[in-house]
Amino acid sequence: MGEPLRPFERELALGLGDWPPGTRFVAAVSGGADSTAMLAALAALAPERGLVLRCFHVEHGIRPAGESLGDAAGVRELCRKLGIPCKAAHVPRGKIAGTAAGQGIGLEAAARFYRHALWNREARRIGAARVLVAHTRDDALETALMRVLRGAGPAGLAAMKRDNGRVLRPLLALGRSQALEYLAGRGIPFRTDSTNADTSFFRNRIRLLLVPRLDSLFPGWRAALSGLAETQRRAASFLEVFAESAIPWERDGERPSSLSAPESAFFAAPEIVREEAVFLAAGRILAGKPAAGPARLRRETVRRFCAGREKSADLGKIRARVEGGRVRLMARGEDGAERGFALLINRPGAYRISGITVEIRAGGGISAGKEDAVYVSLPLVLRPAFPGEFKGRAGAFTALLAAEDALGKAALIGRRVAGAEFLERRPPGAVQGFAEGRLAMRIDGSFDEKR
Image (cartoon, rainbow, N blue to C red):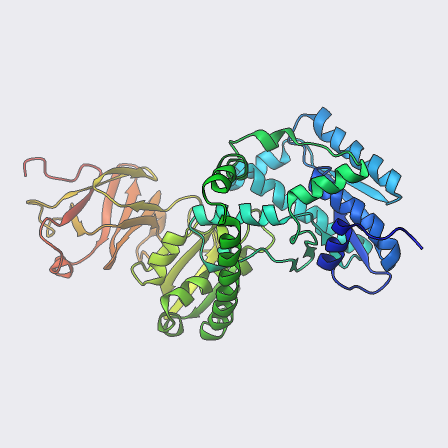
């Protein structure tokens, strides 16, 4: 009979839950304090439970080779002492940085994408029930603070899940200080990532600068934030069920990354349900892509679209539009539009996009009856025209833009080598209800400077 379990090991056992003998697990171990403590505690627990444990380390190719390869060597040495099989995967240098730049996401998000992909591949290879990840109570609180500061909704603010698909977090009831105490008590060394001190990373600013101030000034903040996260988890769960029943998303024709729902059902639902339905659908569309998921959508833009103030919207990696009695969501590029832009204009000024200069200014003496201007309101969105939106010969133009405001499409603009022109414009009578001091939009110098 082995030694009795230590308090840290007993808490980990509760977080792991009950599994039948012979169950296989992949322990994701970076070499830092939390994952090292998890691995050591699992090694003490596994023989008693009859569990099969494998260690997996990912070397991201971001930090200096001497440091990151030293982490891998340290994990291998610990596994040798504990008698646990170990495998390391190495991401080629520059690959994560290249993905971050190409996708327009942070280095942390790109690293997380590759890390999870490698974890999942290893779990499938050995038939593991779960990948065990060493997130602690401190990690959950830091994540909640990050999402509060980013303006997340209920799903984003929801408490971190202990068991989430293939990932299981057995340390969520334990703090980082308990992991350090456990390692010190057993005399087990761990590695320290030099980037943990770099406050250019958002999480590090939270951990090193904000958390100590909160601890000093608001000692009860941890319990309060945990309570908020649990409340939001319940709210998010309710909204998810409600949204799925109220707004039935279906695959949109033959497009592989597109969903649509009846416009009537979408706008009959409460606004918060519409918003959450969009985030849920976006999660389905973006699953398996770098930085996939609802958190990467722009909530402010989602809110305007769901309120019916815009007929189309660029939500980041997702485009949305209302047409033909349906609300359509698609991965960028699925609609055939130019990749990479949609411009939101909130104030008068001059803007240049796709070689077309657009100026918004006070209407003054401009006549909407002239062919060189159109009245608009703000906010105004400039976006690529959708396929089929222009009934003429689109090939005659090097770019086609649509301008949309609260009243819908204000104009369709085409660019030739010689300059830009209005191909379609809102009828002057459509702006009768605009307030005095209304705005006029012109393109490529079409305002009459003698006005």
